[in-house]
Image (cartoon, rainbow, N blue to C red; front, side, top):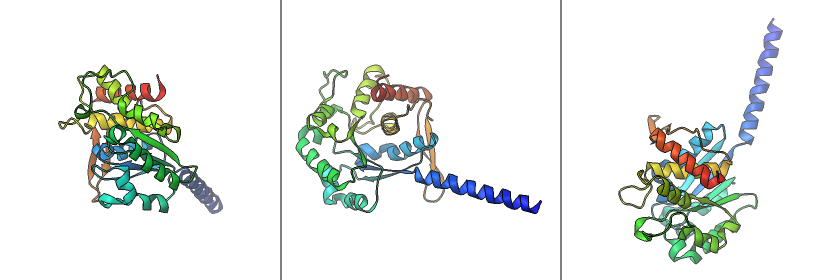
Length: 255
């Protein structure tokens, strides 16, 4: 009987080690590079929680600062250490987000620093470019929301989409506003994303990186702070979450 127990314990240990090894082997390191359009309402953490819900082992980190440009990230301004992070750790996927106005007024600068970052990366690193939304102060109120927005248009014109996959979040915002204008995607400053907007963006990011639909994902995500106390990353109304998932699928998978 004792020998049977020993064999069982050994088998259990081997199984545990194998499962742990496979799980660690499948871990993906995801880095967000951006500013407040990226970090509002804990977007990187929401993406990580979505992945966890689908049994994907993503370790999501961010290098962000309010108002940061890719130039700031490259030069280490605003206390950013983005280049050091990239040099010292291999990432499976990296998401680039420039200042919201740069694709409109300084697309050459956007491309310059994006390219410099790309040149630092191993060829097997998957890269994505976060195409942001047009907000009232920079938008034409008569613009047709069903056509390509100026930000995405300029990014494509600069051929950035040839070397990185676009995260078409601006297009998702336009489609959502066109279909569900009664729900706010921006905060009262009419610039930064509301919880609805950040959740929609997270759905687009999750689905683009994972190639999985966001439909059926939770409408709220919970974590713990540095003291181990429970915090809510985001909470949405059920119907709004479903609408965000619907629009994300439409944009990412065209369905």
